[in-house]
Amino acid sequence: MRITQPLGQQLSGLKKQQGMVLLLAMMIVVLVTSLVVATSWRFELGMSRNENRWHGLQARLVLDGGEKLAAKLFLLEDLRDESIDGNEEVDNTQEMWMSPFSEGIDGGTITVQMEDAQARFNINLLAPPVPPAPGQQPARGNGASSSSGASNKPQECINDPQLFECQYSVSQRRFIRYLQTLPMNEQPITPFQAQEIVNALIDWMDSDPEPKNGGAEQSYYSGLEVPIVVSNAPMTTISELSLVKGITPEIYERLLPNVIALPISDTSPAYPNINTMPEAMLRMFNLKSEILPLDEGQASDLIFARNETVNPNIQPAQGYQNTDDFVTSLTDLGLNKTDLDATELSVGTNYFIYNGEVIIGDKTRRIKTLMRRDRNKSSVEVLWRTDANF
Image (tube, rainbow, N blue to C red; front, side, top):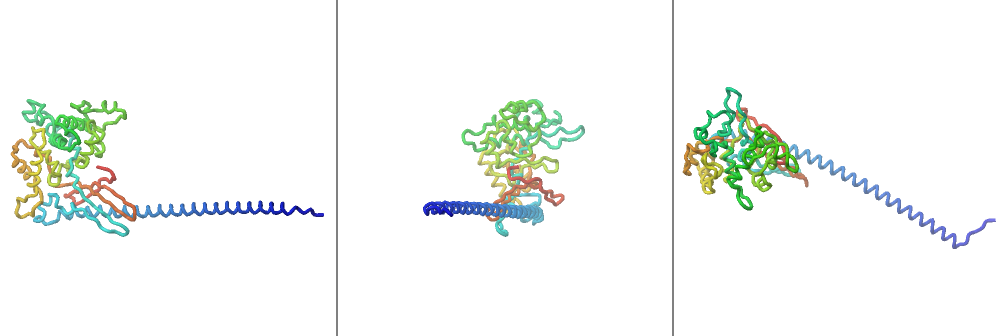
């Protein structure tokens, strides 16, 4: 005999079963949706990664192509007619590689801006020259800082070694003057402060353990809250400059556009190119004994003279064809030729900065490349690449 449950109980049980089925169905929907979303997200992430890799590789190849094109332009410039741009050994602001260009590529654009690295001040010129081996001449004539012996010093430096022209080399004197021209927010850098900063820079790069007046050696940097190891060698990158005593963040920011750390060698000394350096930097030239820079009016006169053409066979604005022309411009300002800091100058360039930017899709890639041209070998080599500063 089968016992039949009341109808009310049957309906209640049926509703419970229906609720469980609905709950199970909802859980299945949620699970499937989660799987679909996760799979879709992984697929989109994978596609995005592949796209980035492809665009990155494409950008890298395009930037490499831009470097090779720039190298060709450097060599082609040397083959131009001298009546157009003067001596082939001269580099000026009218060179074809000085003009920025932008070109469309498959899926984007490339923009290239070349820069004369020797239009900046090479901070490594402040390093004292390495003492020569017995019987050899100093590799770089830095005057006062040379340790080749008193016989090479002028008589006035033997009599009074504390004279400005006797304490510092040609490049060191120039940088002391240039520091005083920086547009500071409050008070400008005084001659005394400029000397202390240069002394600290010399101490950073020399092998002498004794600090100069206002300078600092390893004992000072070891006592900082975050100790620093002094390189006692020329700077590898200009970022080292920010670590040196006396270089405040503001001074570093002001210096950064016009300074660079280039290698020093007998074949490529990287002296400043007087044809491409900005007007403010021309104020660093003066008499050997003068610690103050030229005034702004005198710098403007030098720019005017640089843009004139003495040789009627050469088109205008081709710059100084030799350093003697520049010295003549300085003497036209009323400066005594025999007392000028007229060495360690250049009218040509060996080092260049390649600034490349590629935009592909919504991705942008930038690179800076330091390049060196060897005119004797008709070659251009890449020294290093970075996305920071040299």
